[in-house]
Structure formats: C-alpha cells, structure tokens
Amino acid sequence: MGGLGDFIDLPTCELHRLAEIAELLTSVRLSRTRKNRLALALKSGGYIPRLLELFQTCESGKDTEGLHHLFDVVRGILCLDKATLFEVMFSDECILGVVGCLEYDPRLAQPGQHREFLTKAEKLREVLPIKDPELRKKISQVFRAQYIQDILTPNPSDFEEGFLSTLNSFISCSKEEIFHALQKDEAFLPEVFAQLTNEATAGEQLCELVKFFREFCAFSFTLPLRRKKFLQTLGKLGILPILEKLMAMDDLQVRSAATDILWYLVEFSPATVQDFVMQEAQKSEHDTQLIVEVIEQMICTRESEFGGDNRLMKNFCALINTNKMTARVSHLEVFGFLDIFYDRYIHVITAPLLAATSGEWHEIDNYQKAEVLASILKMLSFCVERHQYHMKVYVIKKDLLRTILVLMKSKHKFLALSALRLMRKIIGLKDELYNHYITLGNLFEPVVNAVLDNRNQCNLLKSASMELFEFIHRENIRLLIAHIVENFSDALESAKPIHTFQGLKTKYEQAKNQQKRKVNSVPSLLPVATFVKEPTVFPVAGGEGKATPRSPPSSNDSSRTHTSLTRVLEAPKRGLFEIFGFPDDEDDETAQKKRARLDS
Image (cartoon, rainbow, N blue to C red; front, side, top):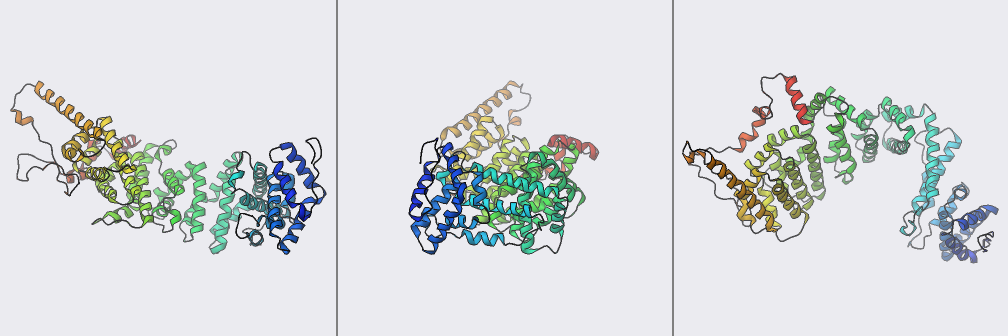
C-alpha cells in the first residue's frame, strides 16, 4: 500500500491473506482520503463477490478462523460507509453472503441466524400488493439495509461521531422515495383504510397491516413539507374513529401499534385530537370513546407493556389539556367538556385506586399493580394542576386525598412518593378551601408518620416530606402551620432536620403574638373570654412511634362548637358556588361564565 497519492493495491482474494485484508480495512478508518480510494478499489474488478466466494469455502470446510476474519472484513467494508459499496452489498447476488459473514462474530459463542431470518422475512405475504417492480425492489433493499444497520450498531466502540451517517442517509433517502411513490398513488391510503375497517381483516393480517401503517405514519411525520397535507388526508379518511376501534381490540400488538399512531397525532396535531374528543363527548352518552380507551389501557390492561407507559400518559394529558383548548374554543365550551369529563370519566381513573384502599389496609404485593396505581396518581396530579375548580370539587366531595394518603403505608416507596407528590401539588396551589379540608380532616397524620418511620434513613420519601414542610414554612401558610404545630410538634421533635420544625414553631409563635397585639389594641367592650377560641384538635389513631396530637376537648363540653369534616365535604353539594361568588339566583349561563373564567 502506497502513500496518499498512490492507488491502493488490494491483497489478492485468498484464504491466507484474509487477516491482511482485515488489517487494511482497519488502518484506513481515520483517513477520509484513504477510505475513498479503498472504496473505489473494492468496487472495481468484482472484488467483493470474490471475497464472498471465500465465505462459501470457509463455511463448507468449517474454517472457524477464516470465518472470523471474514466477519471483520465484511464489517470493515460496511463501516467505510460508502453508498457505492452499499449498492453492491445489498444486491440480490451479495446480500445472503454479507449477512452470512456477519453471523460469525468472534465474540459470540454460537453463530447467528441472520440468513434464516432474512430469507423468511422476505417471503412474508405482502400486507398490500405493490405492482411497481422498481418500488418492490427499493422496499426490499431498505429492509436489508435496516437489518444490516441493526447488526452493526450494538457495538459501543463504533459510536464515534458520524458513524454510519451515509448508511443512515441511504436508508432515509430510500424511505422518502418509497413514501413519495406511495403518496402519488391516490388509491393507496384509501385501500389501507378500507382494509382496516373491513371486518374480514383480522388476526395476523390485521396485525401486520397496523404495524405497517404505524411505520408509514412514523416516517411521514418526519417530512415537514408534506406533514400538513398528510394530516388532512388522514382526517378526511377518519383516522381517529379507526384508532378508537383498534385500541379496543384484544390483540396486544394491534393496541400497541394504534397507541403509537395516536401518539404521533398528539405530537404533531394535538388540536385535531382534542377537537375530536370534545365533539365525541358532547354527542355520545356511552363510555365507548377514545378517551376511555386511553384511560383503560393505562389502568386496566394486564400486560406489563402498558404499566406506567409514557406514551399513554402523554396521550391522556394531551386529550384533557385545557390550556391548549382555550386557544381555539370558548371558555364555556371547555368548561362544558370538563363537566362531562368529571361526570363520566373520572370514576374510570379512580376505580382501581378506591378498590385498593377500601376497607382495611392490605399491602400491595403485586409490583405491576403498584405501578398502575402510581400512574393513576400522576394522572390525578395533572388534573389537580390543570382543572383546579373541577378537581377541587371532586377531591373534597369524595374525600379523595384521605384515600390516596393510605398508599403512604405501602412498601413500594415509589407509590408512597407518588401519593405524597399529589398532596404537595394540592398544597402548592395555596388554596384556602383545600387547606381547610386538609386541616379539618387531619390529613397530615400519614405524612408525619412517614417522617417518623424514616427519621433515621436517607431516602426520597423523607426528602420529599421535608420539602413539603419547608415549602409551608417558606410560603408562610398560616393555617397549615398552626395545624402542624398544635397537633404534631411533640412528635416531630425527634425528627431531623430539627431546624425545619423549629422554623414552623417560630412562625406559629410570631403569628400568635401578632394576633394578641391586635386583640389588645381593640378597646375592650366585652369580656375577654368572648374573643378567646381554643384550637380545634382532632383525635388521631395512636400507636408507638406515630404522630399523637394533644388531647381533644371533652365531648361533654357544650360551650364550644366544632366544625365537622362532614360539613366541609357537603359544601360542594349545597354552597360551594357561593364560596367563589356564584349566587344561587343567577341564571345557569352567567354562573357558567364565571366558573369558566375561574377554571382558566
């Protein structure tokens, strides 16, 4: 081999020179000029076909060393990343020899079975008939190129900058050619949709058709100039009702592919999906709707592939994200949609949660079930943040937070943490009605117990609990500070870090002294006792090492009146609107306008 200006002289195609050929291919990888010259030399004179003839000789003679050298040689040629060589390597004459060499990776205990897979895959029945022979050839070539790419990329040592960039471009350009050819055929997409809606299309045929359509959509959405037209075509053909039907099927692969397609639509055209969901909710009284299918796949599907699935979570959040809805429709329409959602659909989300926490507490041993409950809590946290008015009514009316905080007893720390995060989301709103609900229900007891149980540990649950108390201290939420200090100060003295709870005590004492000064500054026209009201304290289930508030007042003491939790929970039924300034004598339309402004 000469210098950079000389032509590269390739070793002859002989068995005893395979190691030399492999070394040559390795030596040029850092020089672009030498790679180009070597690629020209390899393409000329039928060098690659002659190399593949040696593969037949080595395999028939069981020459393991020669087969390992051929693996390095073929892999080295592919890693030159030259389109002119790909045309030769992926041709009908060479492809089986190429993948055959790649079966004999010296790092594997047993040879691979690439040829068997590739042969069977190319013999599969076509999902839809392709009449153009050139298009059929291009599709076959792309399939082979992708398969070779999957064989080469798992090696971490090859992930240098620009690795196989030409191969990636080759595949991408070929796919774009295929897409354009299919899009020119006006009968193609209607035929796909006709097959999807045909009752006779079932089983493996339907599965392969949906997977093909998923890949077709995935690539189509990567072409910005054609994306809008493609979305319009899908809308005219009725893509969303078809996805609703596919997501309700029993076949896991069909449901998974349909979920992916919906995810693409949510990613690139969320308005289309939201408008469809709103229209469907207003027209239909039944629970066989797209939003129900998304919810049920997240919480009711037994297969582990859907437990806590991020795609489904993103689909769900996009469907009910009212912030984006208000950019296109009126607040009244959004409020009407939320009325329907909290009337028909929210119970589908909370049903597994209520079932797991009803009655006496039993540990959740099934890890998958714990994951599903954690996903539900994420959905509810999203609703707390985006649907403040509706979710507040639902939480207080159903006493939902008490049910959720039961999960803080779980041995699955991620589940206990999810329950605490939802409470943190509620307190973060700094809503007075929420705060009254929490204090009257004594809902800090599970949180305090979690702090005491983890007092000598360092974990996320303890850190999140302490962050919650620090937030209350930092934001000076007086009602919650008074409740914590008056009921749990003694129990929390042993918890660390001590300065967090000392800070709460300091805030409490400052507020108390400030209140005394205000009272003393008012002329005393009535006895002092008239202005004194002892704090209401709730009895808490005792237990060694648990939060135990101070003794409650005697039930025989009739001189004081205590607000019961039942009265607060009944508030939404009888007068929640008055709390926010919605008089009962207003007409429905006026009240809805006010509530819509509040929710927005």
